[in-house]
Length: 486
Length: 99
Image 1 (cartoon, helix red, strand yellow):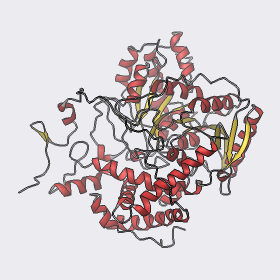
Image 2 (image 1 turned 90 degrees about the horizontal axis):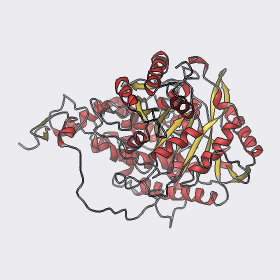
Image 3 (image 1 turned 90 degrees about the vertical axis):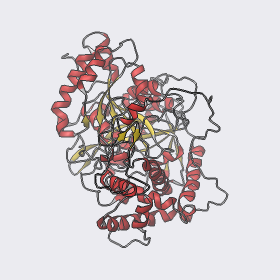
Image 4 (image 1 turned 45 degrees about the horizontal axis):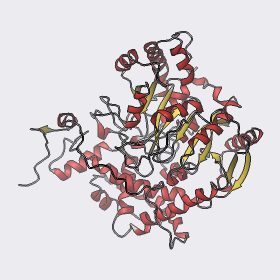
């Protein structure tokens, strides 16, 4: 057991398990020990069911690709028999009656769901400050946010309190926290992984994906989860693919697009210089940089906050106090049961988005807002179609800035939304995106992780993972550990 | 920027009613200002010529997803009702709707 390093990759933990240096039950125990000593400072976990995880570990089949590997699950993804709340009070008391397909597939590959990861309520936010439970802190500086909405999932991987976790990404909610915490986050192509069992935020944008300490680990989790599911009509029937297959191949002849609209003023200087250096590194590995244009980038935030809130206002109508979760005790009739339950159960950001979504869908405004946004969405998608005729991947920072301080933006939602500029277009276009560590930026005297984003054409995950792995293995960024928790 | 009054106004109480959401006077004021400023930002979409552009509802378009119309297992009624705030006789209980 002494050989278990808390920052091990899945690949390394697998080696220890298969050589019997560590049993799956010991792995859960070692992880729990580390979580118990470190997580009180971070708050990445909402809750853990150690006994169930140990029982499942005792039965783990080590011959399977993820045999005996514990994986933290964002609180928006159903694990049968476990509480599930999307970090919202409106789901107080709710127990998931079934496994999400992604979780069922992880289990079928031998993995053990372990721990509910903190998040922004209903995945609405970029800082995990909107959790109804508690905020999560960035392992690199405990006064800073971990990003969001999958902030717990990212912080745990970065802190070495999880080997890997699942998140969901509607506008950057996997990639941005991965960037701000210094780990790897993959948003697969829309339709790659079933959304069945994921509490919906914006159904045309949501996608489940892994957060891991290495690029290879993300490929392993994608292998387990990808594929058509009869329970999700938007999941796609595609030929079986081994996402690790291209990993280890060189980058000679691959073209990397540098969108000029993504490299404008206002970016944190340390982010800019880290990403510029990453481009040079990729070139030294044989890739060819190509300047491209994504002319409709500036409209992405506007389009996103119309479409996402419209879809959210419809999806969240189901939380009405009738069939599950919380019910107000103040209700006098059915209408006040709805209104009071929702007033008590939803947090402020969720209410704000429901009202905006209701507005853009309401009679008289639908054409001016929702329909127009859907048309501009077409233009954004075309930008990417065009670009991918010329390049294999598109490179940018994941976020224009590193982690900000807790409370810094809570009173200014627009400012918070504008920081999503580099990630949200991928969700609007349905394409895949990967964020991985590419250096550090000194902000207020603290070194904070910078994320490199690689975007790929629909179903181009294998190529992205190949580029990401080659970059990662040629640098030392992924080996650096946060000091505040060591 | 956030100290200037937004150009857009938004009828928060009316929208909250549509959304079946009770809001406090404090929320009406806060949301009104914040959402007005968000709508000011969104207005930039109007610069674009979108005539003849088809709307995108789903980025990765799939058509006619059809499966066999067969009877399959669903979750047991008892499992579902376990999550209900109130139930009786195998049904969800709500306040009286008709007098």
